[in-house]
Image (cartoon, rainbow, N blue to C red; front, side, top):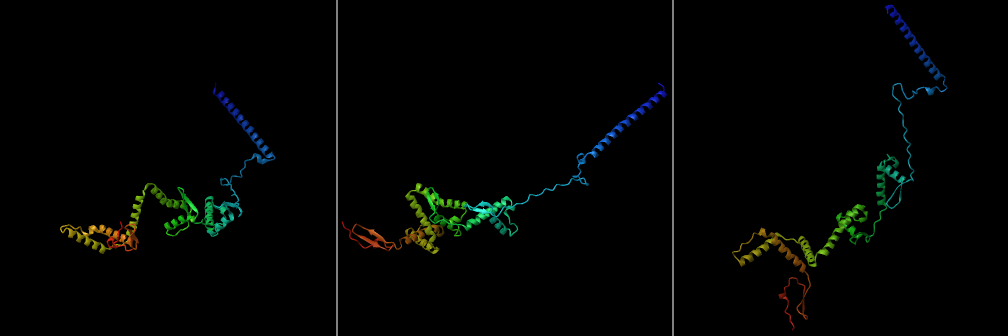
Length: 305
């Protein structure tokens, strides 16, 4: 094929392509024109348009403001709780208490969180209990320990002793402290029961004697001069019996000397002003009130056969 023929064919293809391109564009332009005409001719033009109300000029969407729920307070006559005796707690009582303790800053209990409302109710309960407190009689049974009744008078006496007289009424204690006090009060009762079951009368007597002796020792004073005098007496007697005897040092015999003096003083106190009757036989009896009088000073008596 010659060069001239080739050039002619290229020109034909270029012309055909331009015609096709223009045809497509013309068709597209007509479709766009028809679409816009339809939108403009529609009665409700907003249905076919994009809503741009939520977009501001700075490109940030408008914030939706949520309205807070309107606060509604209950009336003052609303029952918000109950006291221990079943009486109702009215809201106006709580409001009055809150206003007082907050110095007027808060006047409505409904504006408090739930936990703080409970605290207010507990405070009101304490105040109500103090105001309407009634103590039981001294003969009232406040507890039983293994069937043994504990009367309020016992509990009051024990409470006064452990608190040095600061608290004297068992009923004024909270429930937990009452239980603790009763447990402490029950200990000697349980010990006595255990002793009655496991300790003989002779053992009890020995224990009581020891307790009595210890109490007397606290009351009786023993001076150094008394102990030294007793030491010299013992020393003299020992040397008189055996001049070669070794006498222990005074300081090593301190406790022994003190206990001996204590025992003598305790016996003297026991025998003081004691009225003793000695029966020598069925027909004769002699009485004496002198605790230090020995039997050899008692007048001779005639015994009958």
